[in-house]
Length: 207
Image 1 (cartoon, rainbow, N blue to C red):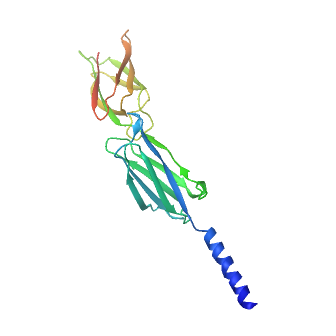
Image 2 (image 1 turned 90 degrees about the vertical axis):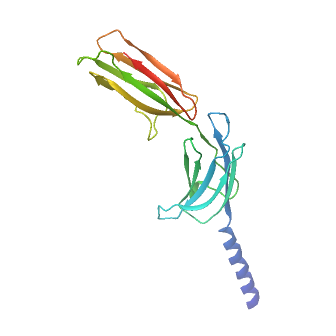
C-alpha cells in the first residue's frame, strides 16, 4: 500500500509540473503600408525581460519574406514581458511590448504589425528684399506627427530677414503640407507635396 501511495503522489507531482510548462506561440504579419505588401527583408527580433528587471534578453530573430509572416515559439517562463522589434533600413522601426499576462498557451498569440517607408521633405523659407518689419507665420498642416524626429505641428513665427532651411521626415507616398501667412499682407496660402519613399523632395516658399 505504501508503494502505491508513493507512486500516486509521484504521478500527481508530474502532472502538476506539466501544468506549469509549455511555450507561447507568437505570430503574425508585418505589413509595408507604403507599398501595400509584406515587409520583405525586414528582421523581426524577440526579447524577454525577466521579472523585476529592465534587461532585454535576446531570444531569436527571423528575416521576413514577401508575405511578411513571422512565428516564434518561446518558453513560458514568467518573464515580465516579451518585446518584438522589427527593423529594416529606411523604414520606421517597430517595437511592441507583450506582457506575460496578455499571453496564452491555449492558442496562438496573434500580433499583426505595420510600418511605412521613410521619406523626407526639404523646406526652404526665404524672404526676398527683406526688411526688419517682415513677419511670416508658418504651421504644418499634413505630415507625420508624434515621432522623435518629426517636425513640430505648432505655429512658428519668423521675423526680419528670413532665410532658413530644415528637413522633415514623413511617411513615403504621403502628403506633406504647410500653411503660411505673411502678416500685414494678402500673401498667404498652402504649400504641399507628396514625399517620395527613401528620398528627399523640396518644398520652397519665396515671398
